[in-house]
Length: 464
Image: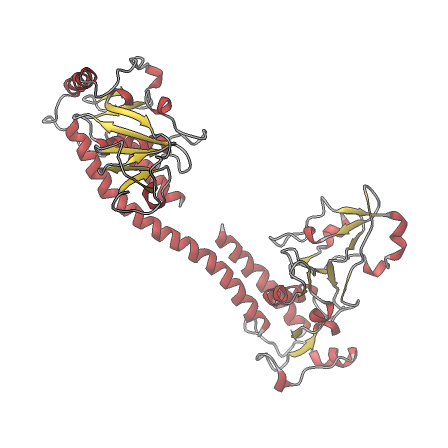
């Protein structure tokens, strides 16, 4: 997570600035250490154990990123290690599985299985070394003490007697975090060899490594906690939404008042059949009734027509893509209806403010529910739904926003109720019509909507 990563970067940067450990008078002299390093490299060249390299340029003031303790020195990485090289091709003698004959690891860049790609019969690196991924997970590094064969895109660093390889690993981790490799596709030898790094006495290098090894596991533990909290936060938001909608539909979110109007009067006036109590799917308050959704709409529940499109016209077509995943409505990229077939669309089927739209065919958005705000209709051209969208428009004595929340409560069910082939599923209008709505008095519908608007917004805020 972001905070854990910030902590790691801060620790590494503090270490390279000499702020993580104490500088001791008993530590060795870095200038003398550099002389010994140079002498060691010259002897290795003379013994033909390493090749002579071109001298690296002098360090300029503008290359120094921050202050370091007086007894430290700025150096170029290539000057304080024995070699920096890149892996070669995969060996001809190769096995994916470890055998008696093929027991030498072949190492590639990457974190999986510590980069072990397979095995071969002869090592090319036989001394303690540091490997750094040049591609893929750029900067991933490991100290390796066993013989192995590096292959392409893996950088290998071997150390001098006066070099603490674990300190060099810390330096490279910090350099990668500070930008090396983040704006490029790979790390290469020419990129890291001349890098300017801070060099403390060998004794303090070890103290830095020890301190980092003490701190980093604690940050790892914190990261696990942070990840768990983030997961719980998201799950809490989702679960809490579901719980709130369920409580609202069961009359547990608001208070039932004796002064509320009678649902039975509305049902009698509209000549609606109600569900007998023995068949209730769940308990609801005594003054509520279960009613099929199809009895609460002012227009038939059906999908729109299959339109012909033109580049421009006076009527927009509401398609599935207009129903956004985040619950908003987007018509900025809606297509236009062919003016010549406009007469086929009844005026009542044009979308109105407070209409509910449901994506009713497959394609990954089946069952998605949207709400048409009045402002959208007032500020746009007329809109008609296409044949993949079902429109719900409630009767006058039924609050449309309440039905919207009822449908959101049932959205997981609707998403599963598509029928047809794998390539083309559809949510049939009858499936929607037959949904059983727990219908409270109109006054309580308003109270439920007001409460949900506040609480669901808080749930969304928890995800931020």
